[in-house]
Length: 302
Length: 302
Image (cartoon, rainbow over all chains, first blue to last red; front, side, top):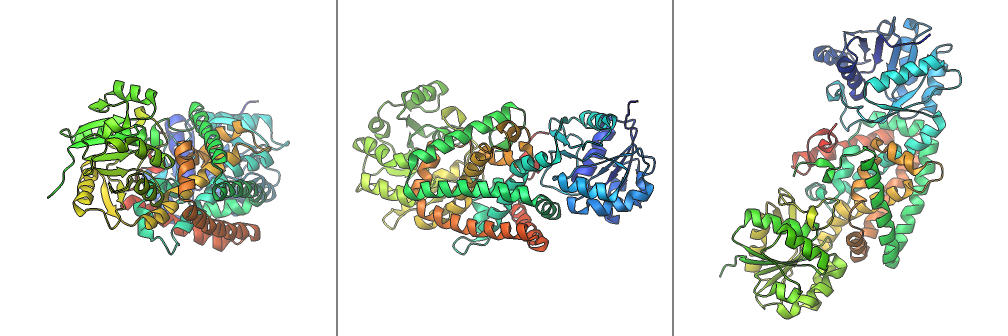
């Protein structure tokens, strides 16, 4: 038996949920999409934007008859969202998500939906904007989607989820949830934590006014403000859900920062130059792999 | 008497020097531009690109008859560059620079060029690329240029330098060198140090391969790789030249990072959400002030 997704339900119609809806409309026009959001305001906007074939007021109603349900809510809200829709779920429905931490989500969904097919996933894509109007169909083009099935996940369901994400333009990797959480702690969670920290630090110094920080931000600071403008609730939940991996990675960052701090204090020019030369090569690899814009300055208009 | 720049000499033809040359050709076509770089290869490229009216092999020859000389070399190389050109300098020539630290440059140039008119300056603009081919005429459009004259600087010379940068599209602020160094430690030097650190940390973990870091960099990490790809020698020099302000600012960053680390460890959701909500507002101000692209994700192509 091979599965194909013909009816999709999206729970949560923010940046990611609404981008999935738009991408499906564009790339998989035969798929019927129902959507639900816990917020009546968001549902109204989704209705006005025509994001889905139907926007449904109750979660259980939205998932009835779905082949695939994607939970696109903050990771701390997965359990509640799963419980709300549970009464409407068929036993054959694949339940997946888009959360940035996977072990905690697997546990929450496994607990809330015993006996159901749960296959957590994480498309590594986004922008600093939030809400149903912020999404766009090409968000997943060329980005990786990491799927973290456990041993019980049916192979045909994993294949159907993989095929779905590939149809939306993503490349799919499969790994276990714990490894995902360590990898994303490095490539996403720590960068967000550092960005949130430095933007907070800069805005609270006595010696330098906030107005000066804003005026002269083109010296580098403005780059950090983009990810520090990401959704506060989503990121609060990510740090709490992936606490151990984030703290372990932060420990390594702190060690390295202390080494560079000492090099500056001692005037160790060679150590600084060696370090800065090594890091330059990483960006070239990211561009060669198609994971960033090759244009200078991210392609900002000058 | 009022001064106007009619003959400009640029010492150092990398990203910034070559951008000045291009901007002058476009915005101030009557100004005669001579250029020099300590590297014969760079001089050849500058000649081929037609960056200047004349590319001169010796620094002293390049500055002869100039109304304004701009040193666009790493801040650690200012003293040597000044000494090399000193024999050719007229007493009326304004000597300025583009370095990212100002107190150390003021001291180095004052010492190397006694009795000359030295007015340090810093256009807060750039990209991650280096070299004479990386420059472009619009680099300074809408960016701030900070001029840091000392008490001895003639007012007409400060006015002429201000007028010059404004003609290139920049907005000009005047402040003292020590304050500049504190402001830029926050808006530029600390962000670069943090970016260099995290990119190094991520590339040296045992648990996560460099290939994984590159593949999943769209989760946030790739943003940091841009400024961590900046010129290693330039940045080595900045950290050594502005050591005190950088270390003072780093201390504040470390305090804040420790607070957030503790909030994660303790599961203090409110503290995290409050912090992340506050930082979101800063980006809106930067965009409102015209200091970053309003498009999502810096306007990267999706």
